[in-house]
Amino acid sequence: MTASLFNVQRPKLFVCVFLNSRELARSVQQALIDDAPGAPQKERYTVVSPESDQAFFSLVEQQRQQLDCLILQDGSQLPALITWLHNQATLLPIVILDATPDPEAGVADLEASIFLYHSAEVRLALNKVEEMAEFVDRAIDQFLNLSPSCRLPNASSEPDLSTQNFLLLHQRRLTEKLKERLGYLGVYYKRNPKAFLRYLPQAEREELLAQLRDSYRVIILNYFVDDSGLNQRIDDFVNTIFFADIPVAQIVETHMELMDEFAKQLKLEGRSEEILLDYRLTLIDTIAHLCEMYRRSVPRES
Image (cartoon, rainbow, N blue to C red; front, side):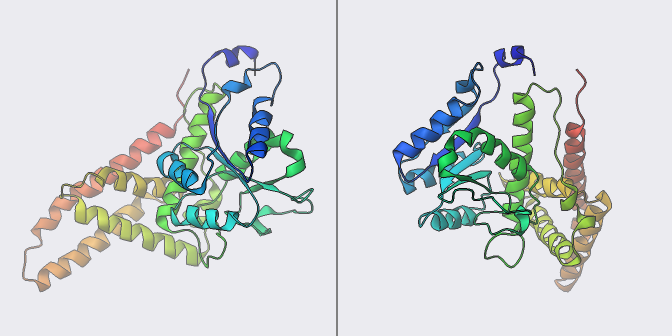
C-alpha cells in the first residue's frame, strides 16, 4: 500500500475498551495509537472506554451496529458481560486480555479450544499489550470467518436466527468498511462456504430451514399490515438466504408450503382461498431483495 492512500479519509475502526483499570485502558489506547510510526494512526481508530458496567451496556445497545471490536479482560466480571451480550443477540470481534503469559500457546485449533464468547475470540497476554493492534486485526479476521452455525458456550446448538442475522449483517458491514479503509474499489460480500446450507450437517440444515420458514411466515402475516419493520424482516431473511447460499427454488418451495397450509385453514373456516393470490407479491418482493443483494455483491469496475 502506498503512503498516498493514508492521505485519503478512511473509515476508522470503532473499538470499545472495557477493562478493570483505567491505567490498563490507557495503555491499550496508547498501543493502538503507536501501532505504526510514520503513519497517522490516530486516524485509524475511534476508541471508547466505558467506566462502568451500565456505561458499557448503554454503549453496546446504542452502537452495536457500528462497533468493530471489543477489548475486555478475563476475570470474575467477564462471564456476566458475555452472558449479557449473548442475551442481546450480539456477536462482535473480541480481544480478551489474559493474565496467562501466553494464553494461545499450544492451541492448534481455536474451534476446539475453550472459549467464553464465541469460537473466533482472540486472547492476548497482559504483558504484550503493545501488540494490541495486531490482535485487533486478528480478531476481526477470525470473526469474518465465523460461521452462523458456530457453537456458543453452554449452548446445545448454534445461535438462534436473530443472533445469526446480526452476525451476518455485521460481517458484511465490517467487510465493506475494511475494503473502503484499504482503498479498494467495489463492494464484496465475504461468504464462508462452511456456512452454506449444502455443507451443513443434516440436523443443522433442518433447523436452519425451519427457522427460515418461521421467519417467512411472519413476513407473510405482516405483509399487508402497516408494519414499519417489514423491510428489515425481509432484509434479515434475504441475508440468511444469501450467506447460506440457499437456492431461490427453496424460497419458492417454502412459499408454496405456507400457501397450502393457509389454504387448508381458510377452507376449514369456510373462507375463499382467492386472497392467497395476493401473496404472490410477497414472493416477488423477497426475490427482488435477493437479486439486489447479488447485484451489489459484484465488484464495481473502476
